Amino acid sequence: MSVHVLPHPPATSFTPKAKSSLKADTASSTTSSPELSSYESSENGVDEVSEPNISAEKLRQIEKMESNPDFLWMTTEEPHRSRRMAILKAHPEVRKLMGPTLTTPPTVALVLTIQFTAAYLLRSHHPFSIPFILTAYIVGGTANQNTFLSIHEITHNLAFKSIKANKILAIISNLAIGIPYAMAFKGYHIEHHKFLGEDGIDTDLPSKLEAMILDNVAGKTFFATFQILFYALRPGFIRSQKPTIWHGINLLAILAFDVLLVKNWGWNSLIYLIMSSFFAGSLHPCAAHFIAEHYLMNGPLPTKEELVKDGQGDNEDWLIQGLAQETTSYYGWLNVLCYNVGYHNEHHDFPSVPWTKLPELHRIAKEFYDPLPSHESWPYVTWKFITDPSIGMWSRAKRLDKGDKIDHSFWTPLIGSDGEVQSKKETSDVLAQDEEEEEIAYMSDSCTQKNRSKKE
Image (cartoon, rainbow, N blue to C red; front, side, top):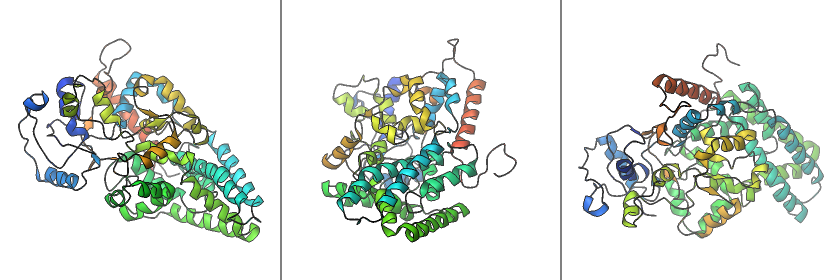
């Protein structure tokens, strides 16, 4: 995987003006490499840029990039904030999709019923018997992947309006997993959204050590088989959380339930739940979403220099695809079993839109989503990840900090219904409303909200 660093301009945000110069510049915003160089007009056909003055902090960042040469290093912010703003400008009706859905609690109850029924019926079967293993893989693996994703949905406060009620439902849903999970996931997942791709904060990212050790077919097969363990253990090594009262409640609730389960139905019932959780994060069709969401399955896109050399310098979609490549959606039927988590660009753009309305969001803003690459098959993603030598643990986009802001007008011009550019006040109002919605979707364990006078 080859990558390149080009000098970065002093501007603090990307806008759609002067597309030709912007395209030439954005190679620096999407990739990095072991060598810092300036543009040579004789080599790539763009205007010559003088060597920039580099601060000590920027040199430190470059050194860190050089020590991790095969990740795709971004110098811009994640793409979802700016695209969310562009969509809200073009389609203010999207706001009507935001907020909790009452479909989630009964879905949680249904899956819990399925899992508890299976655990009861298998209480007398040996854990290594064929009926036990097949049921744990087919029924349990699917059901507990659904459980993981119910907790993901509830983490964004999309089951109830009450933050406390959402946490309680997440813990109840956690009963099917057999291991305390819900409250620890909440903290890490909110950081995954707010700091997407930021090295040392987003624990969804593989470490350099993982990438080095697992950079072959055997290593990638091992990762895909035991990826649930990587996601469970990696955060403790990279960014440990400060425990809260809710972590304690989650721990005690699951341990108490496990004791009651073993006492009344025996160890095999608990083994079934835990085995189901393992299969849910292993080589299971639904588990492929873990890889499909943020791995660069086509490798990093070529830089502007490389496109010019290949005679594709006029590719108008290059910049948008380059800035959008770190998240990929899937629109196939497996979404029915997985809370529509395949609509992943849509989810990251609007984490306050519930799973039941993500297809409607895609329909409303299709001009933004249809041009983006998407996966046709989750199982094929797993197969390609394991067998394609050009794709592996290195195939992730990282950034050292928030990065330069992308102006929301980059995705589409800010054109109002009257055909005129909207005012600064209108833009400011949308930004303020967006921050309020983000506050609700990203609520932390403190349960504090703007404009709330007391804790729930």
